Length: 605
Image (cartoon, rainbow, N blue to C red; front, side, top):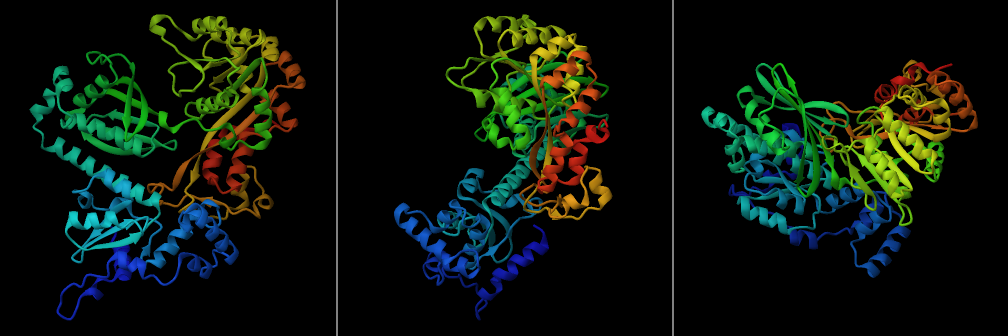
C-alpha cells in the first residue's frame, strides 16, 4: 500500500498509544462495548454537520418506529442525505478513519492469502495493510462486528478498522483477488516445465486436464479479469517474441498482461476448444461462441480468430446477459429526440433505423425500444446473427448461413408468421433491404440497423443497396444515430475552465458555458474507476424524422449532405448538440465529446 496513505491512516489510529509502560500492547476496548458507549446519536451528528434538519430527523424517527429500519437507511432511502455523508458521520461516531478511496494496485495480495473472496464480498471487508501492530482492514458497516472477530481469529493478530464506501471496498476486493489469481497463474506458467506445457497442445490432454493446469487457469483468469473490469472485448495478439492480452473498457483498449511466446500455441488451442472451433485449422478465420458464467453473471462470448504473420489473433466480445435491458426512458435520450422516436415506435408500419459504427450501442437501443412496445397483444419476431440480448416475450431467430438460413430467407418466412413488429439486426445486403421495404409497405413495423455515420447518410446507404427513392420515402419513418461517450468518474473528476477557442470545437460559446461547471477526467483516477478517471459511457443521439418535406426531398435526391442541410433548417438536434448537452451537464469531458462527434465538425451550411 502507498506509504503516504498508510501513514495518514496510522497517524489517526495511532496504535503506538496502545503501548503501556511495560512495553506491552494494550488491547483497546472491544468494538461491541465501544458501540454501546457512544455518546452522540447518528442523527445529532448529522444535525451538527448541517446535513440534516431537526424536522427531517423527527420524521425519520417516526418512520423508524413503524418500519424497524436503521435511521441511516431511512434517511438515505428518502434522499434526505447522501450515502457518503452517512458513512462519514458513522465513521465519526465510531472514531474511525473514513477514506473516500483506496490505492487498489498497492494492496498486497498476500494479505488475502488465507481468505475467500466470497467472505470478503459478503461481509464488505478487505485487508489493506499489515505492520508490527496488527492488520488494518477497510469496512463499510461499523455495526457489522462478527466478520471482524472472525478475521481476528483467522489472522491471529489485532485488527484496526477504517471505513470506506461499499463500492470502494468491492473494487478493492476484486482488484486484490484478481491480482492474486493472476500472480498464481503467472507463477504456474513460469515454473511449469516447458515439455509439459507443449504437451498440452494435444487435444485429449487439454480436454482431460484438471482445472489446475496452468494454461487452462491462465485463460480462465484472463476472462474473469476482463468481466470484472467491465470489458467489452478481449484482444489476444501474437507478436514475434510474446503474446499480448488487451481489453477494451469504455471504448478504450489497454494492456492487461503479456504471456511468453512459448505458450502461444497452448493458449490459442485452449480458447478454440472452448469456442468449439477447428484447432487443426490455423490458416483461415473462424468464428465461435463460448457460453459461460463468471461470479454468478451469465455471459456469452463471441469468438473470432484471424491468421497473422506471427500466429492467430483472437478477439473475444463479451456480452453480459445478466446486465438486463434498460428501460427506454432510462437511456437518458434528450427530450427533443425521445418524443418523436417514441412516436415512431407507436406506428403500425414503416422502417425505423438505428445507425452508428460497431460498438456504438445500436443493439442495446433497439432492445430497449422493443421492450418499450412489447405487450401481450403484439407479435414481435427478431432475426439476429447471433442473438446477443434475450428479449422476453419475443421470438428470436438466429441466422445460420451454413444451413442456408440468412437474413433474407429468414425474413421471408417470418412474414408468414403474422408479426406486428420485425427486428432485423442489420440490413447488410440488397436482398434484405428490399424485403424489409416490402414488409414495411405491407403493414409491418420494421426495426433495423445500418452502419452509417449519421442519420442523413442512411438514405444514401439504402440507395447504394438498390432501394429506389420512392420506396425509401414511402417506407422509412425515422432514423436515429447513436454514439457512446465516456463519462467522467464523479468521485475524482476535476473542475476545468476552457478557453473560448476550446469550447468552439464543440460549437459552444463562452456565454453558454458561463453558468455550467465543466469537468475533465483526473489523471490516474481513483479506486472506484479503477484508476482510469472514467466510469461507464452514456449515449448521444441524433434523430431524423421523415416528414412530408423530407419525403419530397428524398424522392428527388439521395444526397446526404443536402438532406442534412434541410434537416438542420428544420431544427434537427445533431450528435454534436447532444454531446454539448452532456458536456455542459458535467457528464463528459470536452475532449471526449469532440472526439465522438468528429463527423459533425464539417456540417453543411
